Image 1 (spheres, rainbow, N blue to C red):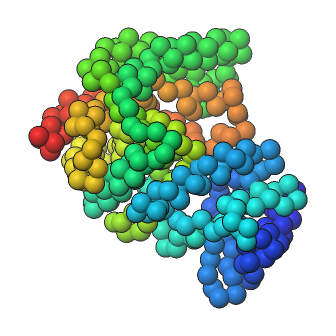
Image 2: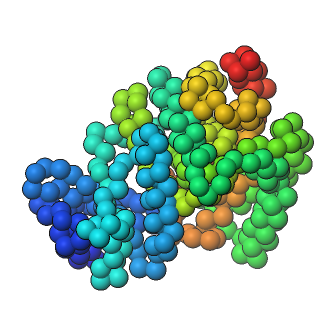
Length: 346
């Protein structure tokens, strides 16, 4: 179905099942797995509309929306979901699933990186979010082995499998595929050193219900404030400091602000702790080491030239190179970052 015909279906769903009479339905920000629209009603109010492709697990999407609603009810900055006339969070018509939520105006994603007061605002927002989700009925926080958060053995298996596939069909010289091949080989060779550095992590880290995909595109900023957290995943337990580090030590932030990321990290962690004092200090001290270890153990997006070459864009290729560069910077200045955090958290 074309974008135009999908927009017509969306307009009909809004009128019939949401009691929203759209004056206009236009394409919204690009989604990874959804087609997004912005609808404006006759009173000038705008709505963000997600159209899920046929075959999408709509039950999982409902669980993700419900998780966001639970966080919003606890005070986290999450856009409200608009329910259908029958109280559903996702409507279905002509095989198309649709969800609707309030539109966050005048905001930008965090893909441009953190700076200034944004460090404090993001740390505080993630702290509030984690404190709220720690009380989710799926289950309370619990300790997990640090080796499960940065799984070197799993990384070794995946990198070996990836290199074996490339050995059977070597990439052409030049370009991202060749770079990814070389980088995967280098990452595999570095794993023994990575494992040694990860031995300094606490034996266990705290796992709890988290957002699940708290990457820069899913954090909306307005000036130096957090406007909204969007695109939750279904409830699942993961390391809280892994998620905190993923957003405050985004590779683009680390590389773009070489003189700012360590003091910025300290301000973010301090604000997080004020908003969520229940997470142990030992966990918070581990944020930069977990962030570096996770990047070192990841095969994304090195595997994309083989797994899904159609998804490769200049932006994704640049992000892949940034992840590799940021891992090197984090390892190089790791002890300095940890010492600054000790001063803040003592």
